[in-house]
Length: 200
Ligand SMILES: Nc1ncnc2c1ncn2[C@@H]1O[C@H](COP(=O)(O)OP(=O)(O)OP(=O)(O)O)[C@@H](O)[C@H]1O
Ligand SMILES: [Mg+2]
Image: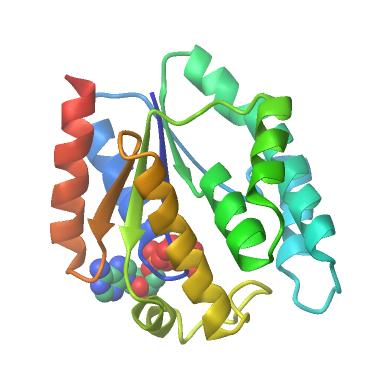
C-alpha cells in the first residue's frame, strides 16, 4: 500500500507521517517512511540544489530536478518497498509537483501529468491532504530558516493551497481532505480512521 501526505508548508505533514508510521508499526505492519525531495543518494544532492534559495533556477529547471529526484526515489525506494509488501508512507509526492510547479510556477499541469505518465510513477492508493490557511501553515514554521519555496510570496502559497483543493475535487476517491487547523492528536485520529478503512 502506498500512502502520501500532502499540503502547504507547515500544515503538519512530517509530524503526522511520523505518528502514523509509529501507529502502524505498533500494529505490526512493516512500514517504509520516506519523503521528497531527497531520500536517495542522488536525491539528497538534488534537494540541496532545489531548496537553496541562492541558486537561480528557471521554473522548468526546477520541475526537471524534482522529476529526476522522483525517478531515483521510485526506482530505489518506493517500488522495491511496495514489491516487498511494505506500507510506504511518503511525505510529499507527485501532487506536490502539480501544485508547486504547475499552479505555483505556472507550468502547464497537463504537461506535468504527461511527464508522470511517461515516467511511469506509481499512483498512491491514498493521499491525505492536510489543509489549512496559508497564514496558519507559515506561522508554524516561522522560527526556521526558509528554503526557496517557503520564501515565495503569500499569493504563491495561496495558489498552491487552491491547487491541492482542486486536485482533491478531481480525485475524490484517492485524495482525502483533512482539516489541519486542529490539534495534532485530533488530526491523527482522523488519519488513522481513514487508513484503518483502507487496511480492512
Ligand atoms: N496541528 C498542529 N497544530 C499546531 N502546531 C502544529 C500542528 N502540526 C504541526 N505543528 C507544528 O508546526 C510545525 C510544522 O510542522 P511539520 O514540520 O510537521 O509541517 P510540514 O507540513 O512537514 O512542514 P514543511 O512543509 O515545512 O515540511 C512544527 O513545529 C510542528 O510541531
Ligand atoms: Mg515537513
